[in-house]
Length: 626
Image (cartoon, rainbow, N blue to C red; front, side):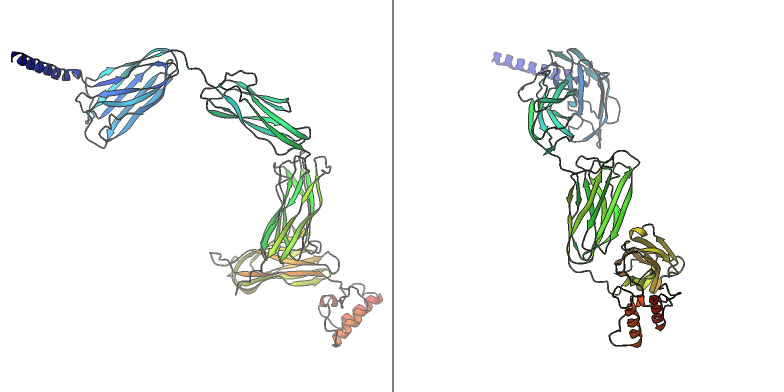
């Protein structure tokens, strides 16, 4: 019984001693402690900065930590869970790393709550890399713990840490290998090529400088120096190669041929590929092909690919079926001006009667040609009939900077397929029109807008075959307040008109846009369509609303003055034919009226019979058919 009593007393004494030790552990106040570690050179590791409130209520914390930057470098400094242990939010006030000075700064405070935290925890975690051997202190300073009233908590104990770095750095692990080689397929003999070689480092270690060699059929083409290549990364090495022999060529890339770099695998340093080297084709001139609908306006590009040649000038003829297509315009592309040099069009003609285009262009002011593919010209067509028409190239010439013809040009013709029916004119809409006319010399024809309401402005283009006729003048007395005409391209078969109201209200009914004077140039009997393209037709309201409209194109035919019966000759038969027409004799009802007014008085009468007869007889004063 006495023994039991002594045991109980002893247990009570132990319990009392333990209870007395608990407050003694925090007797000095809250503490901020930095971990200590023993690590190896090159190792990456983490250390915690811990806070023990020791009964205090902590709302915010900050510290400065210094270290030897010759031994350690900081990778990151991240927030721990000390101030958010109860699920509250916090914000980092400061988080800076200075690896030059060997200094860290960190500050954090709780947010959105009134109370602090009382349990110990990790304030921040620091990731270090051991970059040198030796021992460095992790020294705290500027340590501050604050309570919920933003007042400093007194008596904070700072427990510094230490890191001991020993050993030698881990061996560098490198594996260099070529992983990709770009090759042409095929390659053209005596052409220059750029080959891209991808070199990879398959290991984590960094490689110092090394060479990369390209060989063609066992002969060194070139050596390239790579200054360095970090672990798990790639680099691109660029070689220039010009094959000089037709046949199969073997290309071999070798990385680190001089064994400057110790690698984990020394057997994967080469990559080879075979290339077919063939005779180079000549430059190509290609016409695009299209499938379109009847009535559609569309563009076709004429493309030139030099295929390594240096091109200074280019020309072509292009044939098409004029019953299916009509050309609206032919404009220069950027092929010969791709380097911002100047160029001049030598020829640019449109013949919609024959279905023929001519185009020629040359560079100016520079000595070199161009070598990149591009668009030589863009042709705008209108589909006027259904069916299929080829776009056939001929008379194609490409010239070099010495004005010599480049041989072996490959021609790729195009085709256009036109299907469908033309869109019907919008009911009740206006009609923009130019009539069918015929003349022997000059003639003026009106461009009108029929059945229009409140016309305010119109912008249109008139195109024609300049081999048959050209516009010599646009005037006069239009119904619009203002008429502007651009006739710079009249000799190329195109003029542009803009007419608009300024002070007067919109125009109604049948409106004269302009009188256009044509001059006949082509042979007797030749004809050209007169095609209108309306860019805009708007009313005179502030909104400039589009006016629905259709277009009625015309034509111009060149006549032989005096050829009343239309047989292509001016002779006595025309005198007889005109006389019987005027007498009303059956069978002579139809005449070529524009060729019958030979005295030029604006009427077809007996005087024309007399004038034509005296002209044919060679009587003085009747030499000219007017």
